Length: 133
Image (spheres, rainbow, N blue to C red):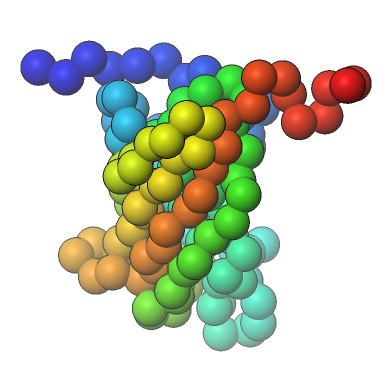
């Protein structure tokens, strides 16, 4: 049985904007998210991609789950549109780790449909990125 972990990073995240953790184990996370009306980019209810990226980024941060994890880069694909009211699940898995560098594969699904996929490069720092040198 896999041990459920407590969240060690991004403690002040607004879960309405970035999702809510539903599973957190070593090197993996699952986040649930419902697209809100104020995320719409236009009158059709199309959700701005930045919110979907935020969900994926948060899932990656939790998969790494280090107090000082930061995003270094990302290669992503937006596969299908998301609409206001859509319920999404993001799954993130650390696929490579080399010292402070972690590669995280993230997918976002709406039911069984893939809407987003990406590879995020994260770094675990000794001090908070905003701390004084």
